[in-house]
Image (tube, rainbow, N blue to C red; front, side, top):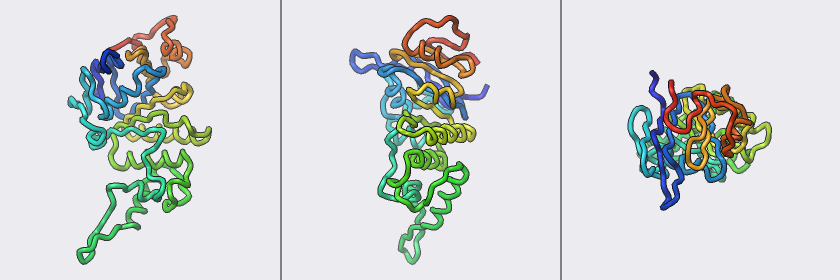
Length: 262
């Protein structure tokens, strides 16, 4: 068996008397796109914070690359190759594309003991990364504030891939984008997964989930209400699971909790 990239084993979390998550278990493989669906208050944000190091679970195990891991901070998770991309991106709007791409990783060489930023070398790296991903930016020297939402998102995702990212969590990534920008964003998600990177996409937009995901995981009141291959379900069935309505029949892979059979 191939070891999953990430396995959650009975993850639970309490905020005082409130149980936000209860025995959440599922896996995500390398190169797999999982859509995490659920109504407001279902526990999606809490789960994302636990995976990305922003919150410790009350109980349960997180197994990442075959090892038990509980990240103490988002920086620690990021160093391990896990990053969350939010709708409000972490780019600096008042500097250019190259500066954003290399932020904290600038190429500097010393001449006569004086550190000199290697602007041309950095620009060549960014140009190559953008071209490989099929991302078109009018100029790499334009400040990010002048780019569209889709272009900004592409920069952040390209940066994640280039610096060795292994698992990306996309939190409502296309909510503020137009139709064409959303289409390009979904295509980019597929290209990222094709490189062996795991993708968890959190969205309220059912059509986007079914366009890009290999598997649909549904949270309801802090529990896994469904874990289904996309081909084995439909938006209508997913909607019923989200609101708690019974469905006519469940496939063997739809189980409330626990790892799915291989």
